[in-house]
Image 1: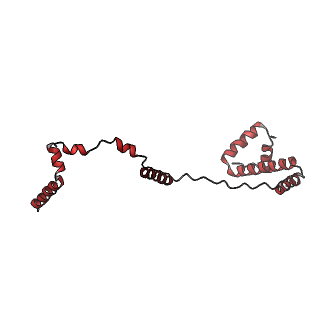
Image 2: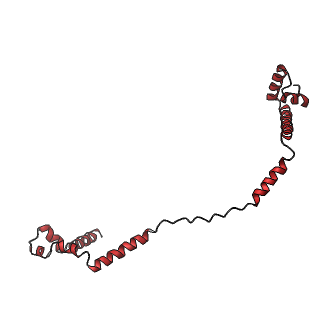
Image 3: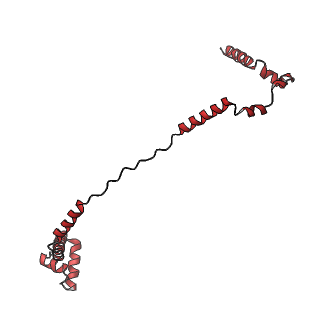
Length: 154
């Protein structure tokens, strides 16, 4: 494999070679890393040279003077924004409970008690068998049955 020299790659980057040589050099770039590096360095050199021509010598001084004038300006400092916290729900529940207690003790809910039917008349009615069981010692019976069951198991 023959390598191309730096002058050939410079001519290649400037498009000053014929089509046949151009095709050969393109194929050579695909397989040769050494020539690829040489080609890339010639491209960098060409870009630097063209950039130096385009940029005037006073460019740096002009830019630095603009930067210095802008750096002198001071802008007002923004105050930090206060982030509002969500309201505490406990405070609302406590306030509602206090208002309810105040209204209860002042008698504001008394009208509700006036509409409730009196239960004193129900005591005179005869009760069914199920009601008698539940009213007359059902918990004692349940306790005794459980106690007897445990004794039988032991």
